[in-house]
Length: 251
Image (cartoon, rainbow, N blue to C red; front, side, top):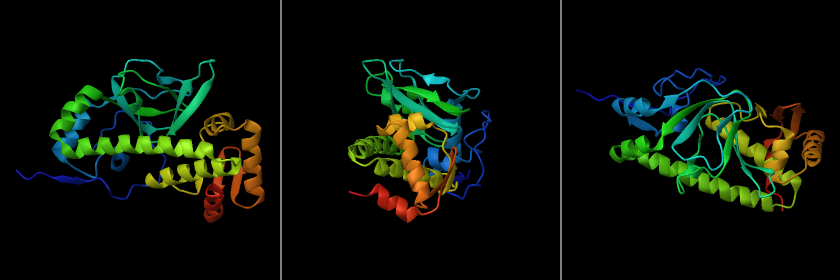
């Protein structure tokens, strides 16, 4: 019997992600991000069999909380998730934002408990992948195992980028770097890299970047006056990508 090979790197339609939670890995338009570039159809079916899908999370609803037992990793299907830790004095420290096609929850692998909490910033659908089942499946699928190693490596790299970002002295650099990150991640999903909606609040952005809300607002206003951005509430249009890149790389 011939085994069909699925190419998951084909062009995807430029349209919003669906909250439909009963879709399978075979017909999900985010497959090229979540999954290795080439899996056999039978392997995709095996993976699909272990994926659990529930109704979408509502804005403010938690996916998991800090110190919860680690059992699964999660792929964002639609919407945006926020990860955060609680400081010793009870304050919330935002540690990351996760967009469709991205994996979260891997912080729990090392100690079998989540090191952060994850909350929906808007209506969001996720695919839950039980880690024990994933381990067993990965043992027989080298492509899948390597893919998750790469995802873990990317997570480490992004943590290092955040440390570098927070060491920058300029608020303009920090905001510019975040906008470029969102632009790049949008492009990865075949969405516009220059027109997008910020699902996170100015408070969350400031918290993540170590800036006050007032400073974040001033930076957006300054970038708009310079003709780098068009800002309308949460809608962002990057008018001058080169100028934004220079801001992010300024010393």
